[in-house]
Image 1 (cartoon, rainbow, N blue to C red):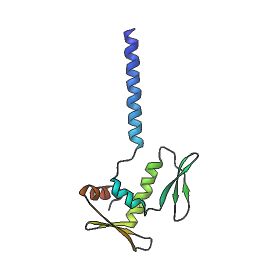
Image 2 (cartoon, rainbow, N blue to C red):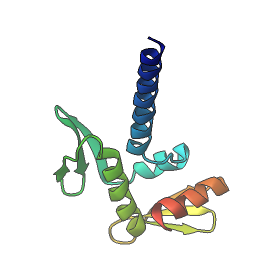
Image 3 (spheres, one colour):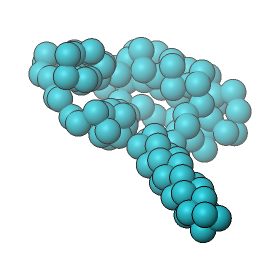
Image 4 (tube, rainbow, N blue to C red):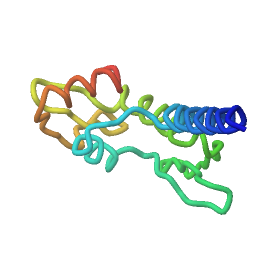
Amino acid sequence: MNAKKGLFLGMLFAFFALGFIAIQKATPDAKPHRMYKEIKIYSPYKFEKTIGGLAIIDSRTGTKEKPDAADALYRMDELDKTWGKKHLKVVENELIVLGDHNQTVSKIFIQTDKERSWLKKFFGI
């Protein structure tokens, strides 16, 4: 009787451990909230809720992508990174947001070293 109880608890623990690992793998890395929120205003990619999950819309062309629900956040990150490499640049303590014709659209002050290192790691700038 005791062996069955131990087996049940072992299986239960394994189930929760695998679930926790799966959730962590499906979640992208954390982003500095203030900086990411200000950059997202200028990104052409937006989420749209659909019956089947989430769609990503490019506001410049109106094209829609419908990635799997598990991949939607990662796909948004990929699109933002590609856009950011072309439309963002760091000059001293400011992040310059550039338009499609290389004109300055906005300047965002970089407040902390954590924000600066995230820009370098996430966008490669």
